[in-house]
Image 1: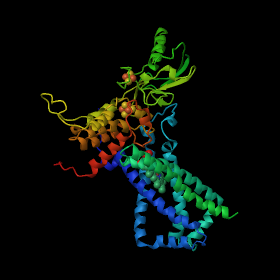
Image 2: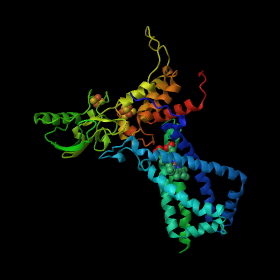
Image 3: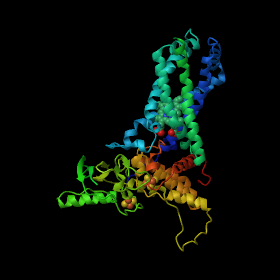
Image 4: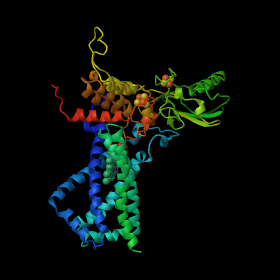
Length: 222
Length: 252
Ligand code: HEM
Ligand code: SF4
Ligand code: FES
C-alpha cells in the first residue's frame, strides 16, 4: 500500500494551492477594474491632462504605494502557483489518449488556461518594461500619456496588445467562474447561473475596454 | 451493423502496448457495447488468439467496473452513462471506434483495457467512513434528518467509483470522486465527528496517489454515470477551507 505523504502545510496540497490561486486571482480581477477605469482617461480629448494627473497620483500617493506592494505580491504568488501547476501537468497522465474528444465535455476556455496564462505573462513583462520600468525606475523625461501615445501609435505594439487582451479574455472567461467555485462560494444553481453570466460579462467587457484604447490611438494616426 | 475497432492491446504492465485493428460485422443495433466485445472475443478464442481483456461485472450500471475510453470520451459518446449501458445503436454503421484504457498515473494498465483503480479505494480508506458503536442496531430514524438533506446526501452517495471523472479530466484529477464522498458525509449528522480530518486526509491521500489538481473544467460531471454535481466540489472546498482556517475547538 502506498503511504500518504503528509503535506507540510495545507497550502502545499493541490486544493490549498488552488485556493491561493483563486484568492490572488480575485484580487487581480479587482485590480483590472481599477486599472481599466484609469486607462479610460486616455480617451479624453484633453491632451493627456487628466491621465497624467491620475498617473501622478498613482505613483506618489502613499496609500497606493502600499497597495502596490500587495499587488506585486499577488502577481508573484499567482504566477508562482500557476507555473507549479503547469509544470506538473504531464505528471498525472504521462501517457495521453490517442483520441481525446475533450470538446464534448468542457469549454475551450477552461482547457486553454495554460496558453492564456503564458500569453498574459509575456504581455505583463513587456507591459511593465514599457511603462512601469520606463516611468518609475528609469525616470523617463516623457509623461505617461506620451509613453502610451508613442506605444499605441505603433501598429505592432497595438496588435500585440489587442491579441494579449483576447487571451486575457480567455483566462477570465473560465477564471472568473472557476475562482468562485474554488472558494466554495457557488452554493446553488441560482448563484452558479449569476456567476456564469457575470463571468461572461467581465471576460468580454474588461479586455474590450483595454483594447479600445490602442485602437483609438491607432485610428487617430490615419 | 459493421464496425472497425481500434483496440489498445497490452500484455501486462511492463509491455509497451499498441493499437490493433479488428473488423466486426453482423452486429445487431441492440447489442450492448460490452456484448459487441464479447462477440469479438468469442471469435478471437475460436481463432486461437488472445481475447481482449476488459473490466465488467454487473452490466447494469451499478458496479462501476466497465471503464473504457471510447472515441475520445470516458464511457463513450453519451454523457452520464456507463459503458455497459451503451448500445451499438448509439454508433453509425461502418464507424471506426477507438477503444483505450482509462489513462492516469494512479491507474496503471494491468492488461489491454483493464486498469488498477485501487488508488480510489485507498482514498476511501483514509476518510470515507464514520464511527459507530457496535452492539444492537439503533432504531431506524432515531436521528431526525430533514428530507431535503437526506436527498442531497443520497445524491452524493450514489458515486459508483468508476473513475470516469479521472479519465475525463485534463489533469487526471479525482476531485469529483473525493468530493462526492466528503459531501455525502458532510450532509449527515453521522458524518460530523470525523468531518474536519476526513477532508484533510482524503485530499492528502489523493495527492499522494498522484492525481492532478482540479481546474473546474466540469468534464467530470458531464461523464459521471451517477450524475454527481459540481456542487460536491464546492462543498469539499468549503470543508477544506473551514477545516484548515478555523481552530478545532475539540483538539487537545
Ligand atoms: C491580471 C492577470 C490575471 C488574472 C486577473 C488572473 C486570474 C485568474 C483566475 C481568477 C483564475 C482562476 C482560479 C481558480 O481556478 O480558482 C486563474 C487561474 C490560472 N491562472 Fe491566472 N490570472 C492572471 C494572470 C496570470 C498569469 C500571468 C499567469 C501565469 C503563470 C496565470 C496562471 C494561471 C493558471 C495556470 C491558472 C489555472 C490553474 C488551474 O489549472 O486550475 N494567471 N487566473
Ligand atoms: S464521481 Fe462519478 S465519475 Fe467519478 S468515480 Fe464516482 S460515479 Fe464515477
Ligand atoms: S459493468 Fe457494472 S457498471 Fe458497467
